[in-house]
Length: 123
Image (cartoon, rainbow, N blue to C red; front, side, top):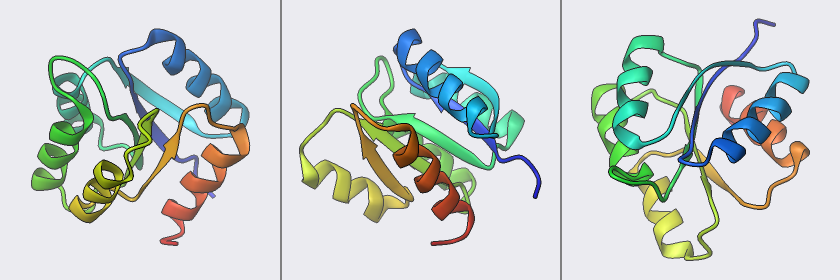
């Protein structure tokens, strides 16, 4: 099986580093990182990763707006939201919009790798 290519989007360098380590250890390829939604859209369009791990709360453009913009350009995009938000309504909105699911911080290595595998297998 080919390596799953992942774009990491989070405004926290620390979180991107932690996620990058988890993904590399699990055999995924981190193709790039972005610190906000605008950067995420540009990098997604250039790199066409298999999966995007997208933080919800970022400035100046957050994950919800970036997810919508990416899905408007590529309805097949596989975006997994990563958030500390406990507000299930926002998360349900994101899934209804087209995100493939979400994981909440703090997360486990197993949780992340299983979610990505599920997304790649089409559930």
